[in-house]
Each structure stands twice: as C-alpha cells, then as structure tokens.
Amino acid sequence: MNHLLALLPILLLVAVSLTKGVKPAVLVGWAVTTGLFFYWGAGTAHYLGALAVSLLTTVNILLVVLGAIFLYTIMQHRGLIEQITHSLDQLHPSRELRFFLLALGLTAFFEGVAGFGTPGAIVPLILVALGFEAVLSVAVVLLFDGLCALFGAVGTPILTGLQLPLGLPSDQVQTIGITAAFLMSVVGLVVVWFSLRLVRKLHGEVKHPRQILLLYFFFVVPFCFFAWFAPELATVFGSLSMLVLSVLYLRKKGTTLHWQPWVPYAGLALLLLLPKLVEPLRQGLSWELAWEDLFGSGIRGSLKPLQSPFLPFVAVGLGVAVFYKSQRLYLSESFKKVGAVFVVLFPSVAIAQLMIFSGVVQPSMVSHIAGLLSRLGDVYPVVAPGIGVMGAFITGSTTISNLVFGPSQQQTALALGMDPASILALQLTGASLGNAICLFNIIAAASVANLKDYRAILSHTLVPTLVAALLAGVLGMVWLLV
Image (cartoon, rainbow, N blue to C red; front, side, top):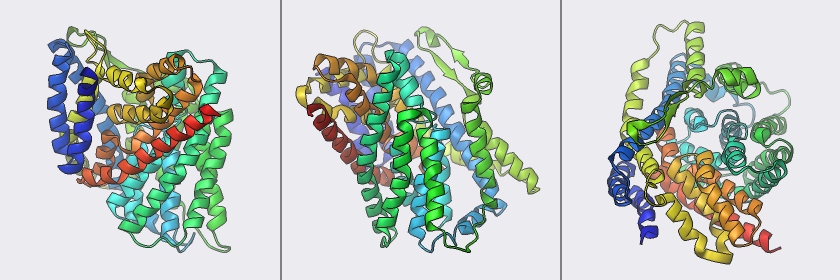
C-alpha cells in the first residue's frame, strides 16, 4: 500500500498540471504530500526542516532567474537584443536553421559551463527575440537541455552524483559515461524528431530537416568522443565544436557576421567557466552558509551564493549598464517577475523535499518508489531510465536524482545479476532527460520568457521525454542481453 501512496504526489502533479495547470497542481500536491509526510511517521520538526530546505532551494533557483532577467532587461533597453536578432541574418536565410543552431548549441554550452538552470534562463529569451513563440522556444530548449544535462556543469552529475557517493573506480565511471553518451546520442534523434514536429505545429513548415540533423551530428560526434576522455568537458567541447562546424558549413563566402552584440553573453560564459577551470577560484567561491540542525530535526540546509550564476549575471549586467551609460537598472521589472515565480516554485520544491525527508521511521517515499520498481525482474532495465526521469522530476536536478536513486539502482542491478555500470548509465541518461519535464525548470524558464502557461510547456515536453526514456531502456536491455 505504501508503495502506491508514495507515487501519489507524482501522479497528482502530472495529472493536475495537464488538466488544470501547474499552479493548482503544486498546491494540491503540497497538501497531499504534507498529509503523507505525517502518515509516514515524520514529525513537525522534520516538516519544518524540510520546508526550510525548500525555501533555501527556492532562493537558489530564484537567484538565477533574477540574474538572467536583470541582464536581459538591461540589454533589451540598450538595443543589444534587437542587434542580436539580426546578427546572424547573413549566416543562412533559413530561420529554422538559425533556431536549431542556437537552441542546441547555446543550450549545450551554458549547461556545460554552468548548469543550475542557466540554459533555460538565457536561450529562450534569445529565440523569442528572433521572433519565435515563447512556448516553442522554452519547450525546445528544455528538451535539448534534457540531452545536454548528462554531464551537467563540468561533470557534476556523474562525478558528484555517482562516483563519490558510490565509491566507483575511475574505469567504471568512464564506462558509465561513454555508455550514457552513446545512449543519449541515439535517443536524442527521437527528441530532435519531436522538436521538428513541434516547430511544424507552432511555427510552420520545416524546409531543411536534413541540415538540422547534420547540425545535431556536429554536436553528438565530438560529444561522444570527449565523453570517453574527459566527460566533465564533453558538453562544453561538443557545443563549441558544433557552433564552429555549423558556422563553417552554413556561412556563404563573402558574408559578414556581427558578433559585437554577443559580447555580454561571451563575457558571461567566461565568468561561468573560470571557476570550473581555476582551482583556487573554485575553492574561494565554495563558501557555504549552512544550518546543520534545522528546527532540531537533524536536517541540514545551506546556501552557496558565490557558486550561483547570479553574480556573473549581475556583473555583466552592470558592465553593460556602465558601458552604454544607462540611466536606470530596471530593477522593478526584474523583482516583479521573480515575485510571481515564487508563488508557484516554492510549493513544487516543498513536495520534492517532503518526499525525500519522509524517511524518519520507515524508508522514505522515494525509497518506496525505487523498491516498487525493482520488483520487475528481468525487464528492470526498461524502467531504469524512468527512475532517473522521475528523480529529476521530483528533485529538479540530474545530480540529485543520481544521489537519491543511484544507490538503489546499483543494489538492484547486483541483486538481479546485471552489470551495475550499465544500469547506472541508464539512471544517468534518464536523470538527464528528466530536466525537460522538471517543474522547477519549466517554471523558471517560462517565467524568464514572460510566459505564464506552464501547462503548455509540460504538454509539449512530457511525451518526448517518456518516449526517449523508454527507448533508452529498451536499448539498455538489448545491450545487457547481448
């Protein structure tokens, strides 16, 4: 009975989100999860501790949203966004090719250098500025982010999410990384197909599907190559390779590209990447504001404000304001949007934390879900990516999905006599794909794009994500049988 009850918050979130909208869904989900939390045997102190962690997590996410809106607003008022919309006009006459180039290339790049929801805070705004619908822009960016979050910000999901907590040797981590990369490259074709279908539905005829597919291979081939040698940099180098190869392929002789309006985003990328590459800087920015025992519950909460993309966003925004002699910073516009996001974001985060911290007198709700799915026996590999997807849906993070469900995936593989590395690769693949349907990402990205119809985003990303996860599972089972 508890196994089925543990699934109830997730089922409610999906069902109510698609029928009534995300805001009613998170409020209903919060109320039901609260009741289940106390039914699970947890007390008031643990409830307050979980809510405190939820508040800290919400603040972390909102800082990214605030920083992104702040930079974009200043650039928009100084005319840089309009210049960006015309900077690549001469690259190729097809707007759809420019759309896919930026949607995949920039999403992969910012995911690789920063993670933290940064692609959803930047790339949809650029696509909207190019004249594409907000729903289309956000949905496609989130779908591509699901492909690119495999190694997250410089390998965090596989290194921090799997290697460190599970004590995996380097050769096994390498096997997990390359297996997941090849799996994602194949299922990514499904995501690209759904994205093309979405463009046809919301924007119009797609005239260059073969060239778009070639742009995809410009990314995945170097991505898989670097996944073998340096998974922490595979996404960054894959995106840079794609952008360079695509420009060389699409650019006609004698055409001029105007890169000047992109300078603020290039500066932002540099500020985001430096701490990942310079160890003393990384250490200096790792300062943490922590609470070890929230409300006497033993639950730990923390903030790492210096590691957030918020400061780079603000630094570049202020730089733009000074360089262009802006008389205003337009702060009221930014804070107004962030306030509206909080009302929806906090309850959705609270649901996740209550499910995770419900394990006081018995296994937590997430442990019950993993236990239920582990009873599937020989067909378990088919659902293994689904567990990763569910983990990202609940927690909002590829890394946290791996931390929460990685141990149970490993133990289930050993109990069923299956290769643990292959099962963990399926977990990693699913956790990455789950970024496309995670409510945290949907709310944050849609809000930055000034879009309040969160349900429309989920309705466009849910089926592609589930189909891709199912295909990954089937491929994984075939691989294990062979």
